[in-house]
Length: 178
Image (cartoon, rainbow, N blue to C red; front, side, top):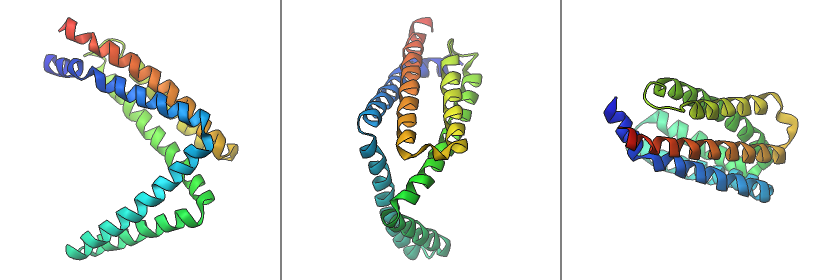
C-alpha cells in the first residue's frame, strides 16, 4: 500500500495535466462549438478510414478473415461519416454518452478502492458521478441538439478538469505524508 501511495504521489501531475487538458477542451467547446462538433466528426471519419485500411492490410497479411471483415466495416463507417455527418453526430452523441457512463462507473469504483490509500478520494468519486449523470442526460435527452451537446460536453470538461486538478494537488500532498 505504501508503494502504491508513493507512486500516486510521484505521478500527481498526471491528474493535474488531465484536468488542464479538460479545461482547455471545455473552453474551446464553449467558444467554438461548431468547430468542436465538426472536428470531432471529421476526426472520427479520418480515424475510421485510416484504421480500416491499415486493419485490412494487417488482416490480409495475417490471413485473418475476421480482421479483414471488421476493417472493411470500419472503413465504410469512416466513408459514411463524410457522406452523412448529421447522422454521425447523433451516433457520436450516443458514443459519448456511453463513454461517459462507463468512465464514471470506473472512476467511482476507483475512488472506492482508493479510500483506504488517500484522503479526499471523494473528488474522484464526484467526478465519476458527474460523468455518469452527463452520460444519462445525453441518453435520455438526445433531442437537445448537437450544439447543446457540445456545450454540455464543455461544461462536463470544466467540471472534470477542476475536480482532477484538485485531486492531483491532494495526491501531491501524499509525498509528505509517506
